[in-house]
Length: 373
Image (cartoon, rainbow, N blue to C red; front, side, top):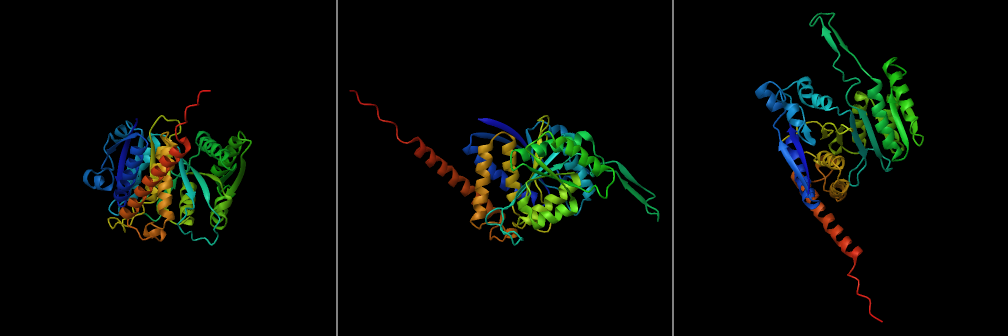
């Protein structure tokens, strides 16, 4: 039996509802695929901050480093400034563990109505550079409270940071339809974005089967709304990738569906898996949260840990529940969080039974011994 140690941080708001739902599904999948998923729970987040003045303990990163993966729910509370909640937990994890790729699928799912009139299927992977860019810590504020108060935030691109994101995206595109779109704003941002364009172009030359299109981010945002089915893989900086992936998930029906993986592709540190949505305090505790983003993030975690069949099994199950019209209210369905989770668990069992039947049919009855002459 394959064992994996997984650190679980449900975090805030609806994270405390969707994480248990997803873990229930992961445990069922693990049982059926002979996996030993060892979950260790950490009560870090905004409630922890209100008690201790920080989002996680001083040695929090050391504790997380002992695990194979991190499963995160959501971070954020009206009682804690966003600068504290995000920079006190998620951003340090991404940077300390060199999770320099943020992978976000954008895909239409049967049973989920898109706000677009077109019925063309959408299947996009957004590769977001995850450690630098616009989310740098370089900058500051001066003359606070004065009429001439000043704030400066530096965007930092390195050749290493841009090229490794481009490599990852180009390799993905090469395994799919061979089309890579790079998000830029080099007509208005005179230094960093032309540098981004240059490094991406040089990198993608190493992938002769990949066609690169560099598209201004405002035009690309319109493209995502008007003809998203023509896009395949998008590579973008930290800020642009964040915005485009939220837009993409809305175009496919609900941000509650969207998963993500914060990856350390080199395997030197644990990777982190989380839904794209936030903590949604307005619906927290009401049983209305959509667990698909968290469950799908769990499937991405299984894939990353080397279990593609288990990942596919889990994805087939939640897609089946959606196809049957059993989604939560944000996608037009009738189900509560618990009811939808129960539907996914039932679908997991159904697919397992079908696989067992298929196996028996494929193997057939034992061959009769040949008669002697």
